Image (tube, rainbow, N blue to C red; front, side, top):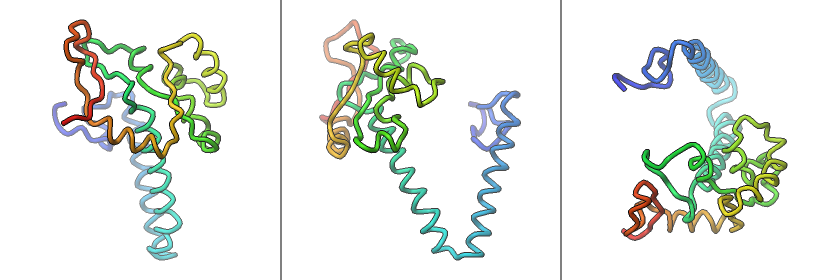
Length: 182
């Protein structure tokens, strides 16, 4: 982009004219929450706001980062450059995982993520039904990993360091796989 591509600038190069009002509204929302937190600190104290607002926010965001990382990181998932990427390949380059009881807590986004990628506008309450329907259709292209989450985090962090193309395969120059040998 030419110039600064800031998410808060309605006239930044990443937005078109149709989106400018939405950015103004978002900016007002961010400022209102910031002001509200400031007033809450004045009324209740910084320690109270950190305990009641900050710590839960950090926990939720940690789960969000962990879930997103594990949905898009697995030794069996390919990565594509622009010569090989298309919408379907990108949508299928994700993995469903079993989080046990947390599947319900997270509205099944953890174990129905492949369906979410294929049908991103589908309401979450149809995701289980859609996942059951697409599994037989996708066959080997459907990815599920039943490894316990705590083990998967460490395995992916250890084995999925960087991507590179398969050695000796000329037909898939734009397809990359995770490697862990530096």
